[in-house]
Length: 82
Image (cartoon, rainbow, N blue to C red):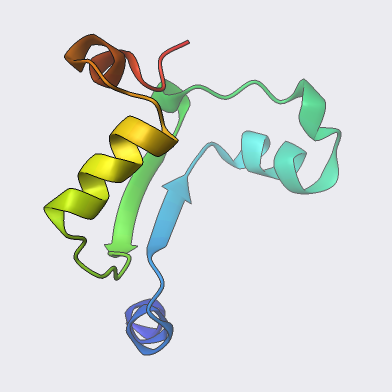
């Protein structure tokens, strides 16, 4: 409950990441570059959602088409894929 109060007070989102204790120890003590985690190896749970302000449709359209240069549905659908 304290995490939710913190998130609400400071308008931040909070995620909990559950992982194997051995992986966690390597993450905090050892060389992180050797740690190989996949989404299948962890569970991510949202404790408190991030707060945000609504954006007008015209501002969103400008950002997507002009800033991100995503001017086709194919570009939008492939955005973020490697």
